[in-house]
Length: 194
Image (cartoon, rainbow, N blue to C red; front, side, top):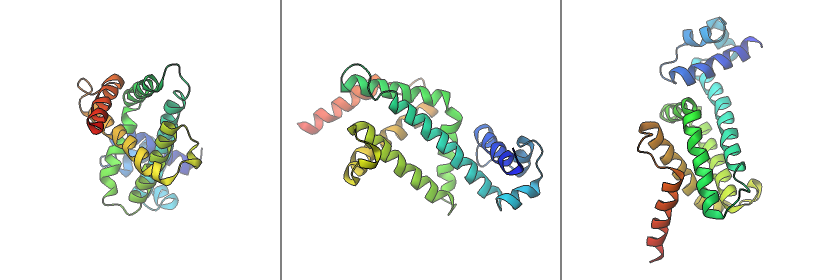
């Protein structure tokens, strides 16, 4: 790998290990195998630009993991309720396996408030997430999902994902399971029908 790739790998490792705010330029250069601090300026312009680029790569990996969780449940046995529960059980498992990435995404969300570069990246990631979730729920290819479905089904699914993830990050012992989510949604849906 070249210096640029080493810096990206080091920054990604730091994001996962230390988080956004606690990662220093020295941390990144140490994690990149001793690439000079000046190389950050040369290749990225600033620490923030490097962390944003590293976060983009991490988000792509995260998105692929979520995609695998959704795709893994595309044709399981059982009906829609069983599929939904199985998908959420797999997604919840990713909260444990990919905990550092989930935490980095929460921290990046806070950083985005003060970053004109990071905020559009986060907005774009959310838009992709809504579309992917809407596609899974409707059984339609992502490119074919209409905007109304993305806005409604995708947004509700993303809210469920974000809320569940936050509960798991803060208190995994009390956070909901896939079965809990199904039971809760059934109760909410029944209340809306009455």
